[in-house]
Amino acid sequence: MRKIVLLLLVFLTILITGCSSSKDLAGPEEIYEVKNESLSIDDYFPFLENTVFEYAGFGSEFAEKSSYFEYINGNRAQIKIINPGTNLLMIIENKGGLIKEIYSEGEFYHIENLLNIDAKGENILLKEPLEVGNVWETIDGAKREITGVNVDIETPYGVLNAIEVSTFRKDAMDLDYYAPGLGLVASISRDKDIEVKSLLKSVNYKARKIAIEKYYPIDIDSDLVYVNGEINFETNASIESLIEDILKNPNNEMLIPVISPKTKLNSIQLDRNNWKLRADFSPELISDMNYGGSMESKVLMSIVNTLGRFYDVDGITITIDGRAYESGHFYFKEDEVLEVNTEGMNEFRD
Image 1: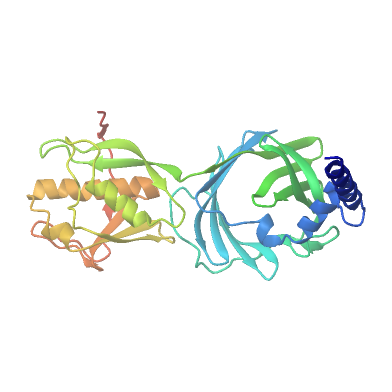
Image 2: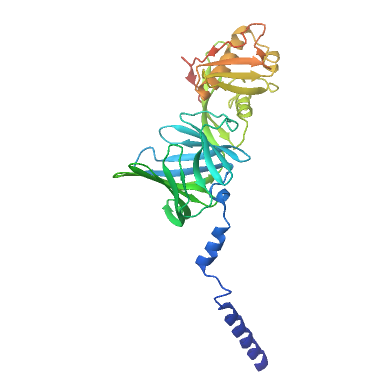
């Protein structure tokens, strides 16, 4: 028994001595630095599907915001940023060690995949090497620089270790903080005595909910009614499929489906010059309808109002497999526009 105890003591002594060597044991800071060196620009600006980022705002009513990746394809991503004042769309490209904003548009309230749009300038947000002193110019000529790595930034989401990127303007400075695995976690703007902050407060892995007014006939003799609803939009979802489902499936048996189960909404195209919409359907829109002229008129108006209100356009062209709409009751020219009209239409409540 005594020999066993002695052997255990010798073993523990060797173990403790071996682990005490400064050569073999790295402290917490050293471990983090090694880990940080292995991180790339992909880690600091990841494209995350079905992830809603919520930011608390300080110093301005418009500093509060949320963001979501609507579409992701290869090295491009489309982000929708929503604040109390507007909806901003941004196309981001990750290429050659650069994170670049290649397109942006404000007042963008609908869903439209613009990943293939031609770049309109390249505003570099983040650039390798990810080290202090890396400097470049913004698209408007301001100086942008990595001014810190392994910087702790306090947010409502927690204290996050991040890269600090500073943008120096004539009378102002912007600070952006990017954390690995999350991306942008804080933005701070300083202009003389004013400081405005947007700080990450939550990350929710879920689809984004988008409000939509859904229009349906309720019977032949009544005007249309609308239902306030939501679309659960997942990253890279087909907006055509989602709206097709809405038109087919009212959420109350008193409401009449707008299109038949076999009808397909082939495409939705927005004319960005005239801000008019073209909705193309399969032939079943007409062949499966089997309505008189009055009811067919209500079906068409339900389509026009649902799409028109969602896309915030005044008029819609409806086509069948790319051809002009023609039925036993109605014939529309190839580019004829049906006007959105919601006057006198009431909300339907269960």
